Image (tube, rainbow, N blue to C red; front, side, top):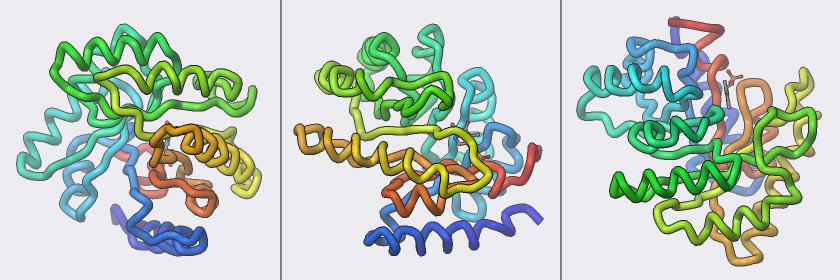
Length: 230
Ligand SMILES: *Cc1c(COP(=O)(O)O)cnc(C)c1O
């Protein structure tokens, strides 16, 4: 049965939020639909999910309009969580409410220009790369404060927080130092005057730990939909 895990996921998120001294509603579930077709997304909308994450612009170009036609009245928030090439920035601005994967100043500049043309303020997060083993993409710790400074004056971007993808570990405790480090970087930036509320971190195998360390958005695919469901 689809979605049999969803109550358990919400419960685990809520408990981890309380362990971190926060309320359950302070953490949002982004259902990652990159392996999932429109019909199953439609069912997810039916059970109340409203925030979805896609990793590729090309796939989203078809899927987002299809879901919209299946659920014309649901106000769905679409998150881009995968690497974005500059040549797809225009389409990304047209399709996505929040882009988590802004990993260079060039890309931010391009998004800013396309958002201006589209008459939109694009909500973004900066993707931070905390170690060499991590995903190829992301702004390094050394560069983060200069990128923050430049991006925060781009008028058509609204910078809301930081995102990271730690290396995969079987033992989620091993991801904890990465989550903690992202939170520390965020807290430091806040103390320097940046308004960064969001921490996008935690996936199916480690979201409890990510929420304990301050995640405000968890990106969960397989724990909701199973392996490669259509
Ligand atoms: C696929 C993906 C996820 C979800 O991963 P699961 O292990 O299926 O929960 C989260 N974030 C990003 C960036 C992804 O590409």
